[in-house]
Image 1 (cartoon, rainbow, N blue to C red):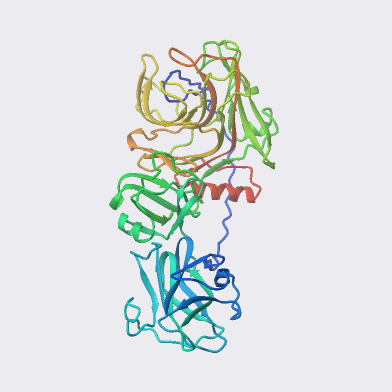
Image 2: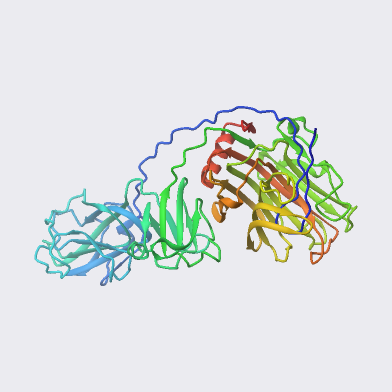
Length: 554
């Protein structure tokens, strides 16, 4: 017997209709290629401009132009002087190559190389080479030996250190009292990929790169990263960055598994300690579902064969008398990728209940519980037709039926975007993990998080459910919230996309209008917790193999 279930309410949470139908299961084994990382070391001094302790003669660009030609040099006046390179951001460096004037094989005195993250070298200074054996420079007694200049230059290697500024000293030469520089190279440590933290949004302003490790506030400062300073960051693929509000890894924690142009107002200028590490979760090899929505129309027979139902009924949620129509589900060419298709949900109203038609598509079988849920969704703020302002709800969620009064096993995980506000709040995103509820009288036992502001545009939504039931929500690789095991699923659910109008006392007027929500793909890994970066990698793997649909979940 087909079982239909629905619910109606005006609080954060999703209405649903589900049909328990047989589903065609296809088995597919993903292909993973071994990745060999090449040496990623690079000369980060190339093209940088230098400054000095005194007047410079010659073209300062010579020192970082890559040409080791003794005819192209600069002079840095007489006796003990220095020139300084600003690398633009802090790097993990472990080698500096240096060429003074070398045609006559002269020897320069008191050659000292120091690095720091402070421009005036007032703190955090590391001396990586020093051949001033009598401390005539006042910078310490060096253990290095003087050397004759040659066209091969002097290669100085040392343990990797995070630095932005490099200061090169000399004190005349065996030929005269003057100082001359032909070229300087500063090399990053081999395979020194790191998380990059930026002072400003959109990867702007000063940048500091940190390698994997745990950094207290003092360690951040020593690496050139100020306290309460970061506004955007780049996270290498497969890495995880845990940002802490307080020193010593305490206070609120925000987790990033992908780069972020803007960390958000809650995180901006709040980082006081940080942990950077690589994910140890292996790529999924178990049971998975993936759909790229590569269908011809809402009449395509593969939709049902692939386990989907298009809701087609006169009932809510929504205004009294509304309907859900399968004709409100369409499949269109991706305007940014001619080989890709998108699934579009459309909801329209003429301002009356009977003139309101909404959209929902959901998996026909309840078989999803622990693991990773993900979808790429495009939310919209404005209607495609009519007057803006209606209480439209744009969603991605998983849900079970409510079976009995305050069903103790009821399960639901929601992403709900309300571009015009609703439920007593303004524009923003709701996530909710449900334990149970009743519609009349209203009773909610759930954990909700609200993020204010616009979410218009494409977003990758991920929610993971650990073995103990802990549910963690991510938006574009950034952890949005985490709910305790009490609110985790206790029975299997369907996966749903729904677009409907919120009405009722205190809600927005039902203005005549049409809204859309687009979906690029949906994915589930059963009993496997993946980072958002790993989800993205898996989707790219499917697409590189021209795989449009997989379902091995049972």
